[in-house]
Length: 279
Image 1 (cartoon, rainbow, N blue to C red):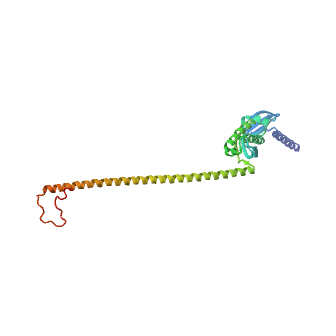
Image 2: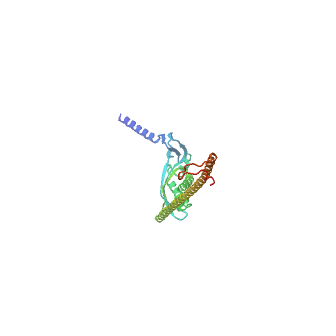
């Protein structure tokens, strides 16, 4: 009886061990590809999910997710021989249809951070050498675009694709940074002086324009007043002549109506008829 139990237990253990060794079911997780090898040779690339393999084949999970490579203090030199440093973070992923190539040549798990770091250092040096230090600062977006374009082309050789590059501020030597700050300060002072001069010139032009307008207004007023006086004098003259004609007309009418008799009573200051007709 005991020998039977022992035999059963032994068979269970052997069966479990054999099942564990010969287990045919494997899983490829999300964001990965399964690289199937047979005696070291790549046989197939499996997608995500369950796969069944015979015991003489091996499954290696290969990531095609986005990976990150940090490049701290990448060094370069500008065309005007100014040393420059920058820190960058590059996000990349393996191109799915090149998994077998990358597995065979560069990485068994999809991690290419060392290649990305080296390539980024090389690209940074090559790009910064095309710019002067002031242009490197002023044209930061163009510099970033140049690095991005060159790095995409470089990493494509390793079967990787660039997702994005996060590039922090450029840093130069302390002496050069002082020189830049001094130049910026002088430029700000120059612009402030120019703006003040423009303001003064504008104010002077405004004053001159106001003075000219006032002078023109005064001249116009004087001309109008002179013309008014002339018209008034002319009107008065014409009025005087009209009055003389009216007076003569009145005297003529009186003469026509006079009966030839002088008034009997003449008081002091009373007018004598017709004595003024000849004036």
